[in-house]
Image (cartoon, rainbow, N blue to C red; front, side):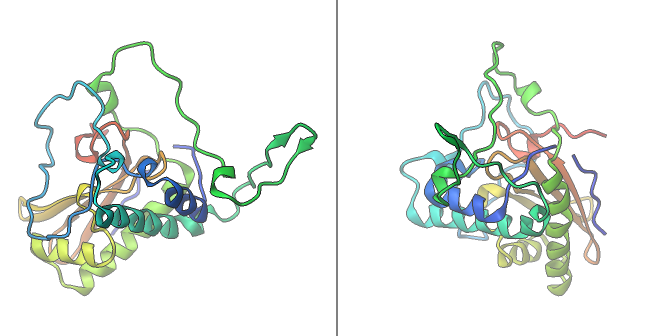
Length: 235
């Protein structure tokens, strides 16, 4: 059963996301590099510190190995493909205006519209403010249950019961970039994990919990300035 309390208004089409990320992958991540060893320890899911600045995006690291960069791009492509049915029927993006009126886009990634950025704030950065739950876009509201369906099917098909079995199943369907998968770990007899599905300025985080036979998934919005597990969820 997938729970979907959903929220935020921003939209993008899958092909546009993939094209933009292929052009500049460093703008597509939200927290880090890929991991190839399923046995490696996962980052803690609880807030263990109070950052004094936004969490840096390891995808921006110029020294990021090519394999990890490729893994991030593959992840972004997966998210775009899952979201593509949700983008159908959205209003067309108006053509840019040239000196002689509207000009059709050329189709080059640099001609595609970029997400609007929030105006700079005059106040100092605050971790407590940054970690507040945000609102999901219409596309993200539509996309969350699609991720939930494919995840539940994978976990049911693998009869996943342990953290290692859940992790193997998740990585097997493409959720295999380390910084985007927190856990899985056993908590009170259930296996819990968090997926970071934020790409191109999006906000979608997905909390999962499995008791061995049933998977519950709860989407919520989080600022890219903090890790998904550090978001202060609304009750």
